[in-house]
Length: 318
Image: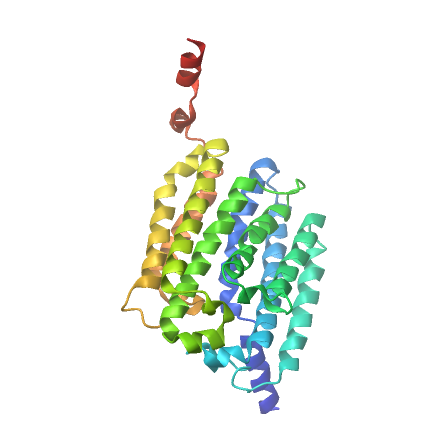
């Protein structure tokens, strides 16, 4: 009995419950939807159901990842300690966990808007594209980052679709989310590459490292950051000029994350678990999140001068 319980706990670690915090990315989508939908008690009940559903769907994706990466994780300095990589539990334990998480997550999704259910399926499909041959996008350089980061706009849309009948949130904000996530993923790849510090071992761990190096990972992450802030700028000008107040904080967050990846004193790389232990970083992220969500419900009229085209129209007329 004790042996079974130990295996159950080890299997549960493959669900990466400590990564559920990533699903707070659905909150801005929910807040955006509240601007055009009536705020009721049912809205927040729907949010609760959405968060639980997305958490289980995310754990399904993590379980799938652990199954297909168990042999490759043996070449990673930290991931080699995972239960499947060490052979402490059989793969079918984790597969049953995957099936349960998929079933329960989709079951909860049926209580929300139809679009939420369809997006939930897309969320699961992207994990199949990322992990399973013959596509296995995680082994294709640059595509791996973009495919994995695509989960960010899906999370945004899931928050939106939990209460909103309009199909999609503003495209500019979704693309900002996508490439912001790509920046984070590229810097994480850079951190992994630096952590392994062995070209042969890094290739055994992840085939995309055949093509990756420190230079192209840094340059690609810089490109993703530029695209992200460009579309954030479009969103600010077109929809919420108030977001200009949070822009400096978001810019500093990008710099801080890049510093954590590049810092030579950081020998353990970037991981979700390590970031969660970085209390100043997490508190700063929470501050940005609260401010961002609050700005959806605030109208600061003097900021409209930044998008006032009256002067330009006068020039055109003259």
